[in-house]
Length: 334
Image 1: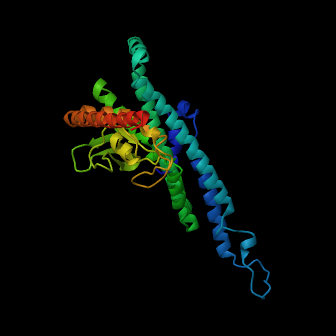
Image 2 (image 1 turned 180 degrees about the vertical axis):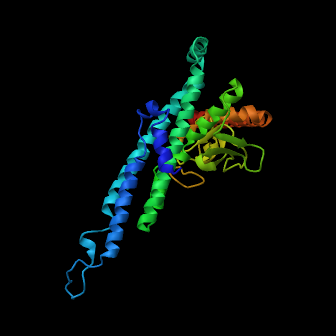
Image 3 (image 1 turned 90 degrees about the vertical axis):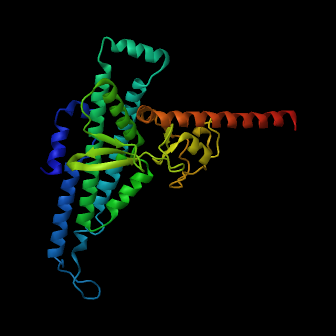
């Protein structure tokens, strides 16, 4: 079955009620625009002259009726609409995942009330069901976007589609590179292991190889791998944070790279501080604390996690002592 048919089946399938509340890629309509553009291009190639001569007496080409080379219709339709759709999809996905994870890892009185409520309702099963729908939602739309951009480049013999994908990455709305997708995968596996949930057809992992990874299965047996090693210490991430650019680091490593102390946190980093990997500036202020991923690693690498916890606490105590010694010397004047 062609992807267009699969995508339309998905939009009108069992999740139709869920999808009514959110945006999706207008795959069918955009494909029609591409088809019209291809017909227009073939017409131009078969009609090299419009019957008029230019100022030099040469036959004038048919460009006044067809401008497929520049293709202003496609450019305006695709790159403005796809950017809008990608932003809306990423925004909806992020907000819903944050809501689910907030409920799952709530502490204090809110956590107590939620656990008490679970005695009477099956809220956690509902959360997992919504998580499954969100995974399918973001993957189907991401694949639709990639396929339509690839088709755009094929029709126009251009690289504008690839450039647009790079722009989405720089704008931090590339759907399959969202740190919230990794968090949702960790939540999904945490729940399945603890409560015997449905078999996990989306995610798998290998934490004991030289490069620990979480693998996500996409339709058509396509695999997407997320590297779970810190780019600074080169170890499995501990107390992980994802910067706005999407790169994962241990909290202590990220704080060191941003020249802030662990107890101060990444929000204390200067706006000029850059990611150690991609050198993007201003990526620390809205860093995502990957709590579900940390819980996932804590359960599966207990000894390693305990060792890192002891080391981080010792480093935090050392930094705190140095910080307050400096503050005391400053206040008393020596």
